[in-house]
Image (tube, rainbow, N blue to C red; front, top):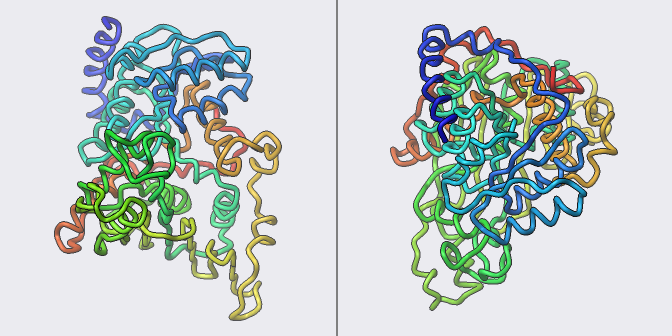
Length: 454
């Protein structure tokens, strides 16, 4: 670990200079890494393996290291790598801190982190301190302190990280983003979004299969039920905000000419998870005695510096069809995902909705039109292909990614701020300015380009 410690010591000195002139890091560019990205994986559970498969679909990657404390997941990953005809990577996972040895090993340019939430920030920080380009799964951070850890480490080391929010790359979302950038909706006024997804069979299983089959969690559960459900026991807030707010933040140029200023949040009572336990396991099951803290529906309202508002909903404990509830509204019209409808003043028949598809086809994003065939089968309707494309191309050329440390911090801050607001009867909470004032001068990211390593 000596080289890593030397790097950390040196980066502290770099950070002292950047703290005096934080704007320098916004334009900092390093030399390209080469024509193949030497890629490591920390966490090869269900999501990590999805990323692994997508990385192996590309010719510009080498899988050089994997890490997981579950030997079964290591075996699954190694089998996939072997079947793809690739060289066997270095393997780490002897203990919970073995990921540090992966980061300190030679031959890792970049790493994808797909582990339980409480490990995300510390692993991304360690990667940046080691000079390894980090790809971090959602959510990034659980506290405001952790949000600052991501930003401060990026600024101290000059190492980039990409927040791997896949919904930003969803086809309809990117088409609507195109419409926003072309001002089809006029000046932007209001947004709605959220994470509305029945996760009861994700939060509980039988300890043998990842989804459902029982009402166990924690030590008796496997996969996400092993760790995710505990957040619903102990926390009352929007614990998973970025699938909804990420695409909206891109449309609203958050951290790049605009920013989140303040938010309020409220929570309903909590009955959904208890009812599920009773229905599936019986009233006598020990878990039926647990009192869950997280309200079944969390509603947050965010005010932006440029005057827009955003209503964000978290709804994962009740029976319902999946929806991110997008509504994008400007002075001339709006798009609503629920109903798949669009209305544009002067273009649509007055007071009558248009079916969205014709508009989405007309404004289809260039990257989707160019790479649709390659995206087929990549996961989540193809958007996972574009997440990997953006990450690999950005890391190869060592440039700032489309979703960076400042975005990860601002979007993830919704979780602790919603908890604080709910705990204080809806009291408004101020967002930290993670850019330290640079949001005023930062240029909006060019989301309309077809390649990312530029």
